[in-house]
Length: 144
Ligand SMILES: [Zn+2]
Ligand SMILES: [Zn+2]
Image (cartoon, rainbow, N blue to C red; front, side, top):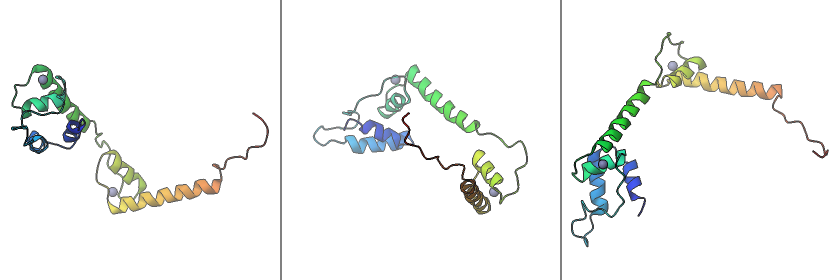
């Protein structure tokens, strides 16, 4: 069960949910109070994981861990901000171009755009094949 920590962290969106999962995992009847005395490894301070563990065990958080938590938050916010904003009006829906812009700007795609895109993809594919550009020349028996 060495990797249990990672698994728990990966799928626990909130400290509360984490605590619940942990209490289930570590509720060891033989060990008395399993909660608060995990057998799993503790994360090193200065990581988001360690920060969460401090919270879970009711420990005071230290600066390194708070910093890690803040950095993670700001990184997530940054990632959201990084999404480009539309500067020009969107092309009309129902075109492959509009579809690509939906994807690019992280917008939901609509059926009209999806249909247009898949039609464009099929068309391109056919064109390529008819051009025969992608046929590999046969190799002769000559030694290289
Ligand atoms: Zn810490
Ligand atoms: Zn659209």
